[in-house]
Length: 147
Image (cartoon, rainbow, N blue to C red; front, side, top):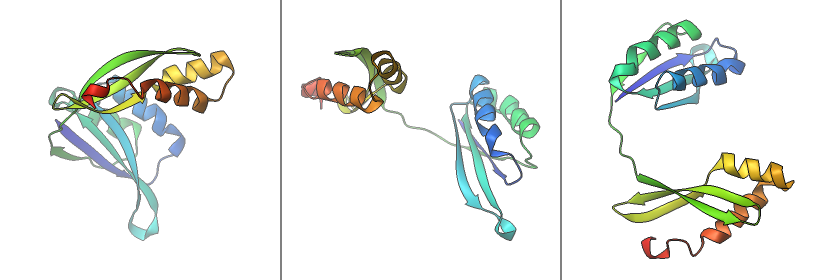
């Protein structure tokens, strides 16, 4: 896996979302921005892209064509990931997916899927927080033996 990074200080911030979407479509594993203070006290960002080796060249091309960067730092890196499973939880608002993360077979985290919560909140005319809270209450006894 590779990390591609570029410092940017001359780009309209409105287009970062477009560029991130394009990078994800081209195989990026993660895309994120870190605010930084550059030379001459200019505000800027580090655009960081994690990718597989086979996607690296087309992602670098996109970074060069879609941003004002003059250079890209490239590092070989590794990543450790938790095992992930999904469960469906029934609530009074409807069914929602929950992402469950495991470390060495032990459940260490569970989190409602945002898009499901957003959809249920809109369909039921309730705040999204109410949907999250309902799912969290349903999860309290869920998979207790693995926690």
